[in-house]
Figure 1 (tube, helix red, strand yellow):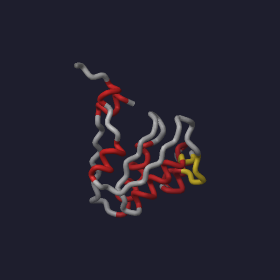
Figure 2 (cartoon, rainbow, N blue to C red):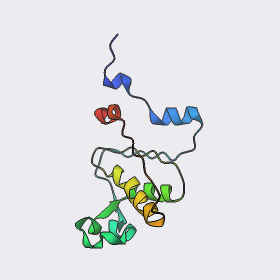
Figure 3 (cartoon, helix red, strand yellow):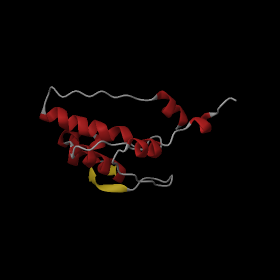
Length: 116
């Protein structure tokens, strides 16, 4: 029997439950994400001179950023182009500002990207 993409999908929530992880789960229907009250330059003042500095963060970006800054692990599932990457990039940029030796390793699962 050959499996298609829908049969190969794994529920992140089920995996984390099985492993006993504590996490925050928030599900939103596929809509335009809600904007937060903060802009990118509020988190990274150096962005004030860039066009992105004026852009408001999405709520899920701000919540994810705050979770990372408080030392929590984060699994963020959201639609393509919804700003998931910016969450860890903002966190990483602030950590590098604190300590120039701070390093970041980004892993992107290509199969998951193909399923998105």
